[in-house]
Length: 291
Image 1 (cartoon, one colour):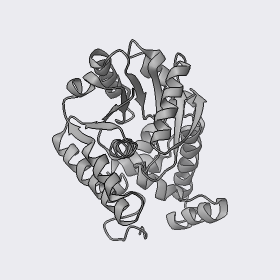
Image 2 (cartoon, helix red, strand yellow; image 1 turned 45 degrees about the vertical axis):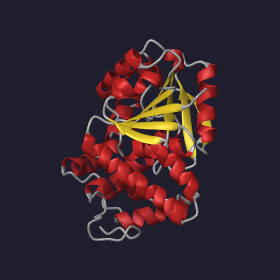
Image 3 (cartoon, rainbow, N blue to C red; image 1 turned 90 degrees about the horizontal axis):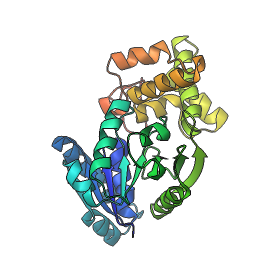
Image 4 (cartoon, one colour; image 1 turned 90 degrees about the vertical axis):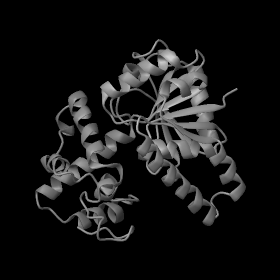
């Protein structure tokens, strides 16, 4: 019986995945190599629970039970020893993912399945880091995880039907909708989002309009819930740049990163997490970004 999920990486996505996994009734361990990162994640997750209770999104009893099922640990080898599912949520850097999957392959039980929260990278390649490619898959969550309803499930070349069905069941317990697609660089959502977001940076560097006006045009003209600059500030400019570099390598010139995006990342303007991206978050309320 599926009972324990280990989430590797306590950044924005990892802490969100840990939250929805705990709310789904699973025993969850959030793992990170840095104790301070786990402490930060714990505070954020507790805040999400508190807000959920205050807004009637979750009952206080459910919140207490979910938090009791959630723990934090730095020792990956130890916590995966009895895991049923490991969900990796680290940066989109192949060498980091390779190290993690080689480790969990060695220490996780034979029945354990592996998932990556990659938004662009190949689950087939990730599966090759293990001796169980048939049990390896991609689960692409969306930010903020506790609010966004979709998980994009991507099967690798050797992912078997049992693993797909297993992951669909896990997603259902998390309260998520799913789509299952076959592997191709960028999948469905990241290919589209990367194109729109990158083109917005080209527009900005060409002087076509202000960030506010470009965002407003996309939201009101195309009925997007967020403008491309609001979105990239939320997901991180560095994460978007990594995705674009990967897609440029795999799919060609239409994904070449805009020079202005690269410049912003070099300047440390990474979005909400750094206080400044396209917009400056040091001078605003949550709902009113300023340039």
